[in-house]
Amino acid sequence: MGQVVMLVTNACAPDPRVLRQARWLADAGHEVTVHAFDRREEHPAEEQVGDVTIVRHHLGAHTYGASFATLRGLRRFRRSALEACRRAKPDLVVCHDADTLPLARALRKQGTATVFDMHDLRHTWARIGAPNRLDRRLASRWLEQRTKQGLPHADLIVTTSGARAGDDSPGLQQHVEGWGRTAMVLENRPALGAARQAVNDGTWRIACIGRVRDVATADLLIRALSLLPEDERPVLRWAGDGVAAQEARQRLEASGLTVELEDGFSQEDLNRLHDGVDVAVAMYDPKRGNIADGALPVRMFEAAVRGVPCVVNADVLMGAVATAEGFGVACPWNDPQALVDALSDARAIQVPEGAGTMQVRAVGLWLEALERLMA
Image (tube, rainbow, N blue to C red; front, side, top):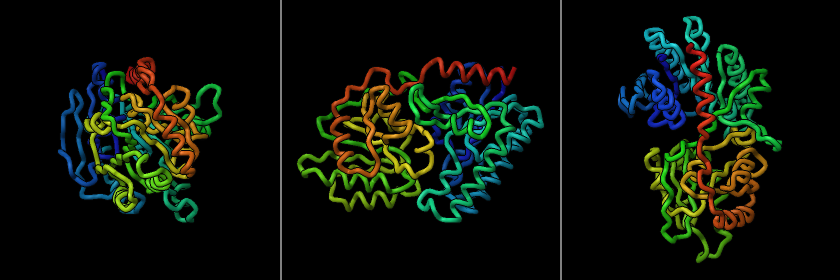
């Protein structure tokens, strides 16, 4: 069995995709350590989660977002993580997200196999909020070039979505292919049995649960729900932290809608947060990073595995997946009346048993690919 290190630039407190993969490897008999960047130094420096060891690098307080201070913090983490890998000499290192990909070249030089797990397209985030600003476009182009330059140093590329047969919507796999590389797909789906079915409480309620990076979805929900007579409006449950969480919260509080507000939450809170929810909303401004490129947001799968139907963006891959698998309704962006209609249609959906869950075969293929690199 091999020694595996995973690198991630958040605190992994938790990072569901990283920990899910780490547990699969540990269950297969491998020794797994996650090196994480605890930017705000809010979590234990070392933690044991089952058979997985999480080592959090405390390097002074650093911010999230697109800034030079953030880039400096990431550089410090990469140096610290590389030194840890040089000491441990693992058989395999999984670089999660493009911020850790620059380490792949040095790791291969020391004889370590490398995997690049591309959760999303990092360079698209630089344009959130001001996609046409020259500095944002230049930053995005620079980040994209950095990612492309790092790809040849990965022995295997894994990403979170791929095009479906018979549908024209691309996934992130197709974006990698456009860069001249190949990638296998491992979607961000929970394992079968990882969640219980949501409990209905008789209140007409919708929910938007997840990281808040802009206020566009909050604004659209306010406009849509305000079209309904007051006695027909659903309660809105809104939960999540993120760079735009405070502004979104203020707008929702001033909207006149009935809103249940929560800040950040953990994976263990998701069953509770879906209880009483009739429809989940997983809609995003398509100009925002990754949506038009084929991202499959985990929040729609987290709702589906709990028996909660969702409303998602139309004309992109997430809409094709949700409708084909029978757990959601695709809705055009920025059309409040269409969203009202979609919420009503989704409320009538009976989510199929097992919808949204990870296929055992997909996990097996991924594990086999990693074990071949360690052989």
